[in-house]
Amino acid sequence: MTPREETGRLRTVTGMIATSDITGPVLSHEHLQMDLRWPQRPQLVESDPGRWLDEEKAVQRELTGLRKEHGLGLVVDLTCSGMGRNAAALARISAGARVAVVAGTGVFTEPFHPPFVRETLAAETANQSGGTTSQTPWQEADRSGGTTPQAPRQEASHSGGTTPQAPRQEPYGPTGVERLAERLLAEVGFGMDGTNSLPGVIGEIGTWGEAPTETEELCLRAAARAARYSGLSVATYGRAGLAQLEILTAAGLSPDRVAVGQQDRVNDPGQHRKIAETGGYVSFGTLGLAGDDHAAIGARVRCVMDLLEAGHGSRVLLSTGVSRMAQVTRYGGAGFGYLFDTFLPALRAAGADDATLGAILHDNPLRWLTGA
Image 1: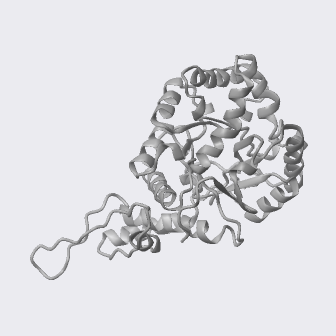
Image 2: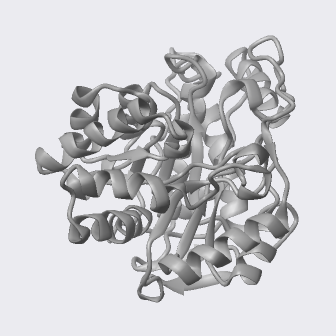
Image 3: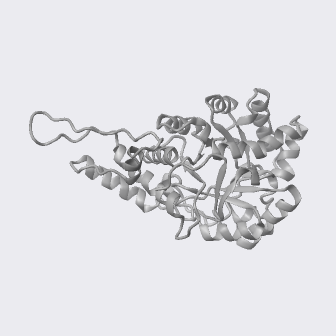
């Protein structure tokens, strides 16, 4: 597996680049290709034929326009396994628009988990019933002299007989977490979707409902393990932001490597401040959903300004969050430029200065991605 990456460099879908190559703003939560129309577990969420995005040329034209007009330097595409990710398309869009793209590995929320997640759970259940625990390659690499902390070792205890007792495990146990982490690290080391494009972030991964399910918690813990080994950062999804951050940090991941997502849909300044005070990033990453609703825009502006006034500007991430065909300008949507055309003017009107906004759009996402 691939070891920890050098600080100050980004893995993009077209190759490794230095953060100094990114001089313009960064869109820290977007989807350039996505398909969430049909969940793997339809009993948990209804299908939605509008929940997809598959327009390479239209997206490429928009990014090209934003590069020319606003100097757009980087897009973070948080479309991971279970969301219809297409690494080859991301590479084509990036090359055509001349905008760097960082892609994500990981698994989305439980209704959209790919089959291998359920297979891992089934294998873990079999292990808890008396099977043996094998070690993953990345654990062996940890013990061979690397600087990354090892996953906890489990010693079998003896009760006097010749057969060792099975190690006590939490629900689904560390073995399930290790196996899922190994799947993520395989993409980190060898590429996504049958290509040699490497992911540069883990996510978006998180919760569909108001609280993490057992399976979603397992996936978050696996993301934390993979992040600790690879040096990649994590982006979460869902309203249960504090719970997600607690799970990730309890698994050993530093909070400053976590972007807690969808906080523009959580009108709770107290939660936002707590995330920032803990050291995580508060991601207002789906701002485009506010549309032209002045009340919705105003509520999001107040949440951002509250963090700025509390001295947490260095913990804010902003992005449009395009995720459907209907949001693309070709089909009448505000497009990826909504952040620049609508939300930033509203922040300026509320008192945010250009220096602060420049740091939020450039310095913060690069610091989150690289840990610099």
